[in-house]
Image 1 (cartoon, rainbow, N blue to C red):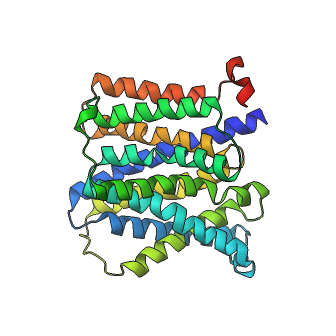
Image 2 (spheres, rainbow, N blue to C red):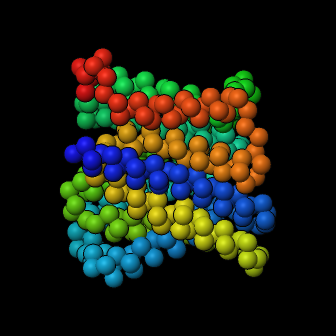
Image 3 (cartoon, rainbow, N blue to C red):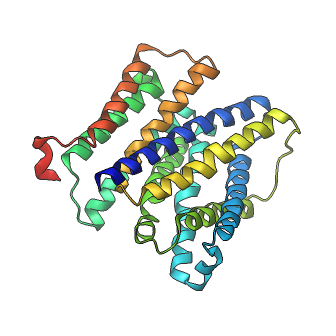
Length: 303
């Protein structure tokens, strides 16, 4: 059991690191052409990745179209795509569009608090002391990284707050909705991920079918493939498999590795200058993630 938990944690860390790296590819696309929008990037990555994963699951013998014979399973996966994958991706980019990536990261990281609240209210699972402490420490770390330590410079407008909180809710629903289905192995994780991505991509295309003109430049399509493979195909599959071995709160707290990897990548690739506050914030995030999985006698009563 312990080895499986370690495996699950490693999967989530890798997935979140890849998501952070994919942001660097997206940054490269946006820097290359202003005609590329976050909506188009979200639509295209989800639709393409969904098609690829569904076809791969068919070749793998997982029979992905069997879900339509079981309406409940199909509805759960559809809900996962629409209420989980879509807000956690699209709403995040909306905050970036109307505000900036720092505010988007801070608001999205409120997600674990929604999970803890949901479990307390609907599953009657009181939050463990370690969960509360680690959530606060990790949130403080991400806040420090995102603001460079100048906390009084944040300006959250109602529009930013609206999309940011939807993004945070998406973090929670993205984790909670498919959890039971994954743990019971009723439907292969590859099928869940593939259909979830495809459903969300199709819904976005239906809502906004008009497509921008994308310049035929090699750097754009290379970066797009990076977003598709490193930012979508690999990490979503790793994340779904990880839910078989770890709980929802641990999963969401590992999301701290996403802004951490994005910050390190930005320093190395885009010459971002890291201040002392950035270093302190990074340490806080790492300590919070590690402390969550260290059992100390003081916390045994809350386990």
